Amino acid sequence: MTVDITIIDEISAINQKLAERIGQQKFRIWFKNSTHFTLSDNYLKVGVPNPFVGSWIENHFLIDITAAVTAVTGSAKKVTFNIEPELNGNQRRSQLDYQAQLVQKAQNKSTRNKITAGRLASRPVKMTLDTFVVGPSNQLAYNAATSMISDEVSPFNPLFIHGGYGLGKTHLMQGICQAVCNSHPQARWLYVSAEDFTNQFVLALKTKKLDAFRRRYRQTDLLAIDDIHFLASKPSTQEEFLHTFNTINLAGKKVVLASDAHPKMIGQLCESLVNRFVSGMVVKIDPPDFRTRCKICSQRAAAINHHFDEKVIAYIAENIRSNVRELEGALLKLAAYSSLCNEPISLATARQVLAEHISRTDPIVHISDIESAVTTYFGITPADVHSSKKDRTVSLARSFSMYLARKYTQMSFPEIGRLMGNKNHATVILACRKIEEMLKDNSNANWRSPNGNKVVPSKDILAQLEETIA
Image (tube, rainbow, N blue to C red; front, side):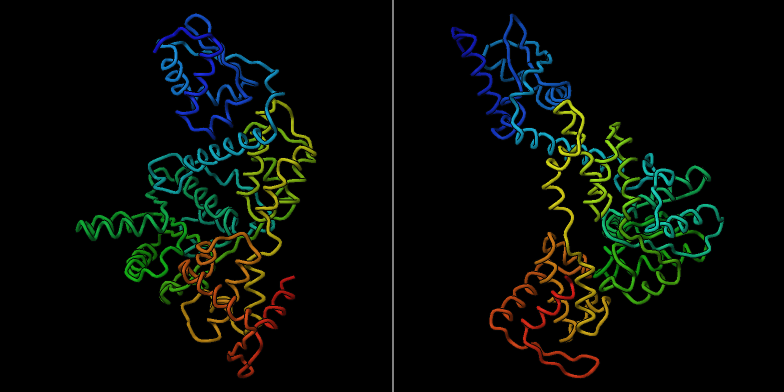
């Protein structure tokens, strides 16, 4: 390519070539208004508003920048970065928002990779009981976890921890494994998800290595399995796990399980497994209270080497109440925003930056409120809604629960189905359509209550349920 064009034209061509390589959206977010290119001899100098943006661009786009410069100038140039604070004023607030969101997602992914729920026996465990923030909502679960470590023989088997997403179940399980590893270096322990257990069982069957699979799982001093509700609707895997549990239990070894729901509320789980689960210690983790949320925010902020004013911490804790992951997400977004803008986060800035985050993550109505209202109205239990029962009463209650969950929460069809007994997302869609059609014609709903048959217009049912939820 000829080089007889002006320096300005070359810079423009480099920008255009770079945009073609990385895409217009990434170029707009990270380069337009954020950088300033200067060609000098054998160098391309990239001006950036602050070290954070410079480091990010160097780590993610250096190869693309080098390729774009080579394509335009016909020769390779050394790329250097220098800080130009005046560029801070060029960045639009929407651009900073996009940058902060991308950094937050990348940091979340990095954190998940470090603490991924895999076979932690072969890698360092990142979550420990020392970093678990204890409060009224999780005190019993924490005490049960510590007793699993201190006693040679567990006073209960299994320890079954249940609660909503992001409340600390995985943290406790990894903490138990870490403590056992530290106190008993020779102990054989295994931490996997129920999905891993299922996949490995199926693979063992196909490759005719079932004996090796069983030795691996049954000859352990501690077996910790996360998301045990994944076994629902898998009768063969349930039977295999039942035998695995019985073998470990008879040997006096320990089993720790975690699930989103109480054993009796996991749909399509065999009665034998449910009985084994409830024969041990079943403990629930509830969402943290305000004081505990403040402690969690302060601890997580220290972990990412960032200090926030107490008013900012209190604002986050007051407005995000659902789970710890949402608190962490808010902190990461503020930390990224602070680094990109090169200034501390004030309360006013926190309110502005987190406005969308708060409205999206903390619904006014929770699915537990919906289930409580619906099951009380129809005279059944939450376990019925989560079960595979299909009689008229349960089916109607389940349909109203799914419809209200879709209407009043931000959950997707698959999420609603998973929380209501691992139902298929298509089941949720059909249930919502069924209720919509009933409401459209205000047709009567017929069901059998504890007090006999009942016939009530569908709009009247919805009105009473919504009033109860409110």
